[in-house]
Length: 144
Image (cartoon, rainbow, N blue to C red; front, side, top):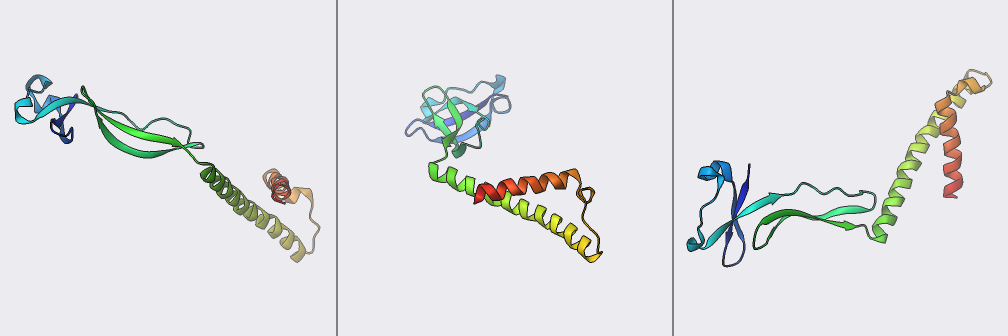
């Protein structure tokens, strides 16, 4: 399915984009330069592949008209230092919220043991909870 863009000769603006197979006999557009526009192949590029930890899509899609084709493009830019710093703070906030929920689990085990007048033993904590506790200690030390 080849697409074509009708481009005004006067200012290179795009009038419309069509499916060449549906719009034109044989899929090839006619020469219409005498009517003030021309048909150019339209190349629609997909979203670019990039590292979302360091870059972002800053623009697009937008159509770029050259003498021989029209290309749908996207603009990818690197995060600024301020954006990277803000993302790091946000990631830390998420990690702290998660750690607080983990801490709540640990506190509940302690309260339950206190209310039932029993001692807490290592088996009260499943391996995942013990790991969460260790991770929480590391996080608290890092944030101090």
